[in-house]
Image (tube, rainbow, N blue to C red; front, side, top):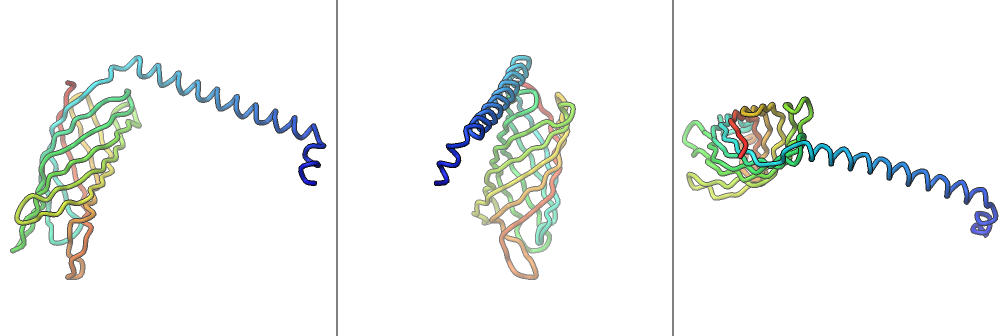
Length: 192
């Protein structure tokens, strides 16, 4: 019965078909505009690789770690003037005062960088692993790292938060997983 009411009103079906046609037309126009804009942006920009070398200093947010120092190398592929993909590795050391051992690790991360202001201010997200390699540590941790930065043709300065899901910290004299730190990176980069 309910279908016969819908079928018996031809104006409703025509209005519905007209509305669907307009929605499809608007979506197609927007998609065409985005495709044209992206094609022009890629056409006018030389895609390519960049290589950067950086030094890092960090402040761990949990005990027993006091500070972090490290160095890294980052390869970046520019997809367009605004977007890049990255791969970063290096070596960093979490220093501990007292009788506990320092924690040295090798980060291996991939990321996505998006320039948001005048092709210099960017937001970036990275994910990967941190491989503990010193002083008897043999754990590998998931590593997540959002960042904000400023880059020119040669210089890259960024501030990031890093979370090591599986590295242990002391909270209320109990060992728990989940180390966080704030880190500053100063780097020099160039086109390959």
